[in-house]
Length: 143
Image 1 (tube, rainbow, N blue to C red):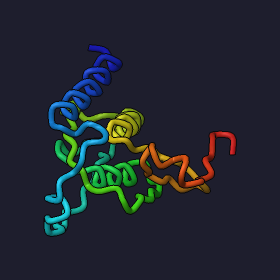
Image 2: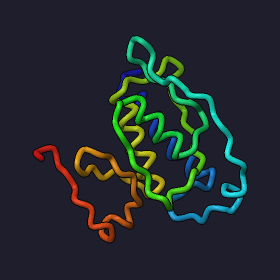
Image 3: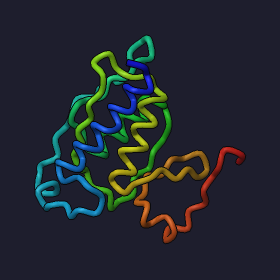
Image 4: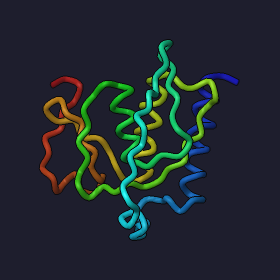
């Protein structure tokens, strides 16, 4: 199977998992997330020496943002109102290349109503619906 077919199957799998697990954009979260005691998770190294990325199968959005920060060595700020929301990620056992992970990350954020706004060299994760209200200057590739 070609690399494009692998990516297509991966993206479709994530979409189906989100739809069937009730993780559709705009669904109300329960208070159970807030009621959980914060647990310290061991630091994960996601990138192997040969540059292949391995993500956990079950992660919440905040942990995924932390993983991507480690993978691409960039800073991310997360809006206060973004709560950890569990996502299921099915990836090939052999892992993925960094570029594929970043595209998958953007799709997962979008499926959850989130996007990345880059301003002054910092990546801010915000709700898509809040972009107009925040008055955040956005950089394009030419800045």
